[in-house]
Amino acid sequence: MKRASALAPLSRGHHHALVVAAQLRRATSLTTDQACDAFLAYWDREGGEHFRQEEEILLPVYGRYGDPHHPLIARVLCEHVTIRGLAAAVAGSSPTVAMLRELGVALSDHIRLEERSLFPLIEQAVPPAALERIAGRFASAAA
Image (cartoon, rainbow, N blue to C red; front, top):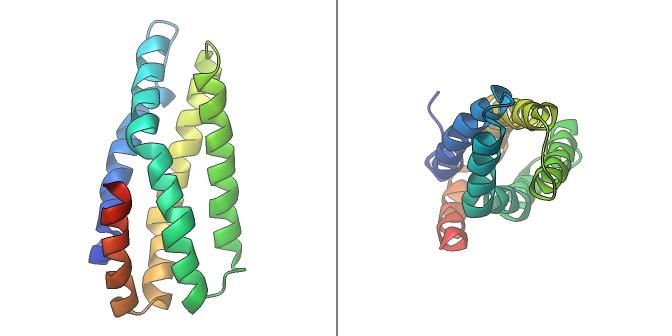
């Protein structure tokens, strides 16, 4: 699917997250440490920042042009809270295979929701010029 250029950096970030989520979903007692380390490295380098950019840049811009009370916006934010909680639990303990798999499913389902539903909703509601203005904010926020 062709994505608005302003959202392309977020979509690229989703690709790496899907790779990590697959590792989490396939975790076994033999690969727990490896899957956990891969997730924590992703989360520390880009995952947490990615969520922050969506929450502080993307969704407020959508709220200026679309319905900020749209059920999809609430769902995305609630999923962010869930994933942040799971990430903190994984970081703060010796995670079980079940914990890692739960996190992997939550992360991959969330990414698919954003790609298939949230981003099209935003692209439809937000004028192209407004989307382009936020592209620079994503770049400077990542720097």
